[in-house]
Length: 215
Ligand code: GLN
Image (cartoon, rainbow, N blue to C red; front, side, top):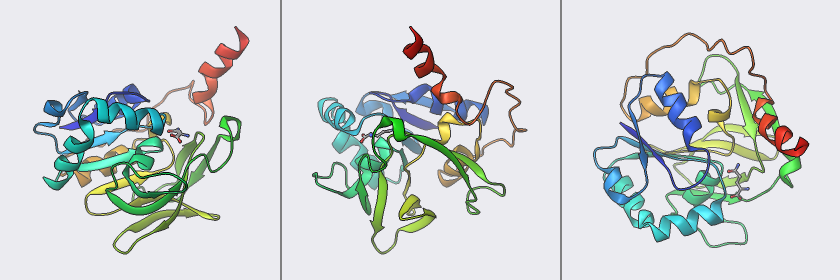
């Protein structure tokens, strides 16, 4: 079973992707919910807010202990910020992967963008990537493998225990990263045919903000 930290951020999108792969999942709101998990996803959202909530709910030490017990952890965007040992200009939070990360490094929310990239370790075909007020991973320590380097920054890294991506695979219709993480957790992820969602486009994640803006 894979848990999705459910304190703030895009939780349902991760649960949806795991469900599409036939992977049993659970919302994680308190330390007892980590029981029996093989993996935990820390979603994107806002890292300052998430860092306060994980303290209030006692999840900071609980996540560190879970990692020591062998639970694999994947942080997307704000989740990746929480996992880093170094944050430019700020104190680190969980410090579970040896990397330096810089928050909001592309600029404001309006500088958010979609791209595609080949990540051979994760998928045989190029995968769509969504960057929303994303951080940049600036450097990694020994033992951290780089899965994706783009221009002047690193976008995806991993160790035996941790996966960190500065983009949001859960906001695309592509399941490759969720399949990859499930396998990292030792779970079988069903091979599903590509989703045929005629309404999906690389920018469909902006639909809600367009609706909000037009109200
Ligand atoms: N900018 C956010 C932060 O610094 C992260 C954004 C995201 O998770 N999409 O926490």
